[in-house]
Length: 147
Image 1 (spheres, rainbow, N blue to C red):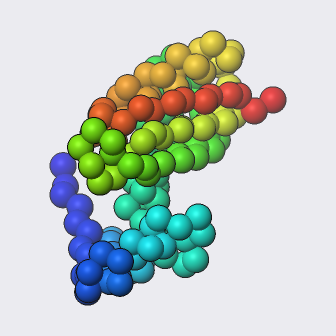
Image 2 (cartoon, rainbow, N blue to C red):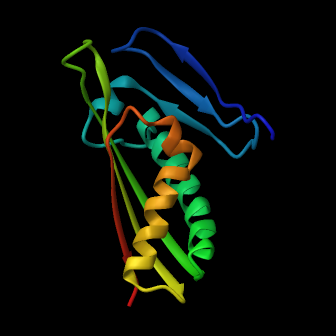
């Protein structure tokens, strides 16, 4: 399996510095990062490690869920996955940590009822490589079928 690479160039200190994250393997973009924007309510054109983790998790989960829906005997037509990744203080070790992830998926699936889709979603949550990498973070799953 291939290795994928991202690179960050950072200038300055934590509070007054900023950087750019480059998605090197794909070459699809370079994105600005800064700690003040990371900790603010409004991202204002900057990305953050949490947003990049959310992107990775939602994409990985969608791929895994499409396989697990088929394992359950269904046919996935469309899956809409949102990952909300939260950052907060680490009261035990100091600094910050990921405080939780909420995966929300709405699926249009043929051949599965709500219980079958929930089983497939739980299996995808457990089997997705990004979920496995994030085992130290509480991951909540909200799965529903589109009616």
